[in-house]
Length: 317
Image (tube, rainbow, N blue to C red; front, side, top):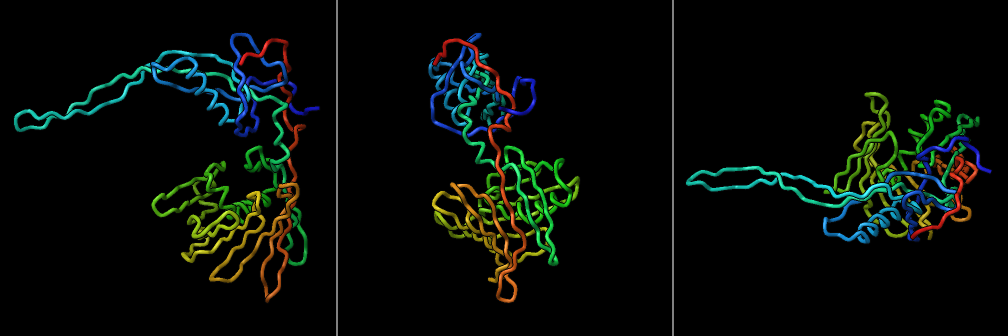
């Protein structure tokens, strides 16, 4: 049974994952014969001389990359794009520059992307909540961190200190999440020449957290070495951030060093190819001290809103 709003929205926010299976195409009043969601508008273009089959093929490829299962075609049209071309002429001993508009005809096709409920088999891989047991001065403090489908915090559902702790002590060191450059609320700047990415979290006009990572000094399938700069601490001394992975590319341990001294290490707990938790330890006087322990809890299909119910018709492909 699916919980959530009883009113079916025209466009529903559903997490998607790329795939390679066939895309169903629907025209006019046709609809799928199984429960589905309308998830987003998708469009593509092709040269004016492209066939309709080529146009549909391009749309299907885009749909696969986005992760939808079907398309309701809503629009196909001829269109014209205009761009400026600069011409140079030599007139006697003078150079004359003229700009002119060039028109290029093309075709455009658009559709509503559909996601079948039966194909959403990955909800159990998306972290919904992390419960952190933080150990300070011999006492334990419980922090609850909530996430949306895309790994972004839901601060309205969290204690203020939990938000501050996560933003200051956990997410800045998740270098691979930041390399994707898609975390809500964060600003990114990528220096291609020096292989450096800088990122920061703002609160109004103030910088809350700021860091810079130099991409893999050395790496292989199971080990990545980053140079990490904590710009929030106003220091130019880089940390070394070591990331270790298993054969499934899951991060199993992260270590932070300062001047070759271990500051802390995160050790992941994995089950059925999922990171179900992690613990952070500090090195003190030659022994390890547990700083916090985090347990991950995952979404399920029950967290999805109600799908659109099927109607009997013939699926066209």
